[in-house]
Length: 259
Image (cartoon, rainbow, N blue to C red):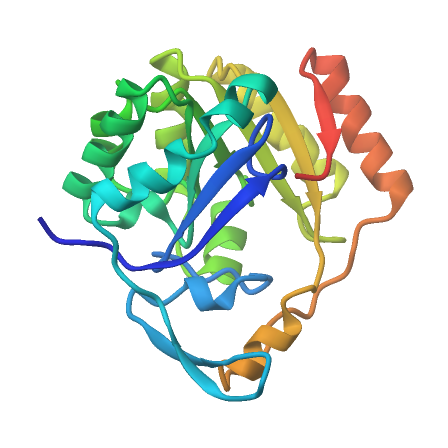
């Protein structure tokens, strides 16, 4: 079985789904968002990155499934008490070797551990089908309802994003819809109306909406990777976030600002 590359395992995470979670970050993504704050997640291969001492260190390693299950199950008590679990993130977990991901989610689910899939949606629907019996929550990014904008700023159109979102909703998956908001690009009245209209027309059921204002906390990582930084966007105003939040709440969906 081919093993994916993992670049971080973060324990006691509170921003990658409900409760206390262990988040496993898989290396490699099919898109390259210009605002990405984890540029080290984009390549599917290990790569050198400067560490805190200024020395180049190879980032990314493989694990056996048994190792990951053992790491995850050490914190079962915290999951149970907080309503948490394990989040598979990236990069893009659904673009990894699917046999490995399917078996990992199955093994975790057999232990009674909640598994959340953090996805950009630019993935094979067949891959989503294979984890559907085991994953019980999807943190689903909807970056642009406009396909041309999506391609301009991520490198791919949004057809798969929309089709896969409808697929998960049609299969009664639990979905937290995550909207990464960039000032004057996807926080406008027009984009808000078009997004809500598409959600309504396609009968998309989401459990919650997370509004994620743009931030540039990853700028130093580009330097450490010897890569040009592409984080050159603006943060939506608080007033604008309030308008977007109210529109989704009026639609009948719980909303929070932040991860």
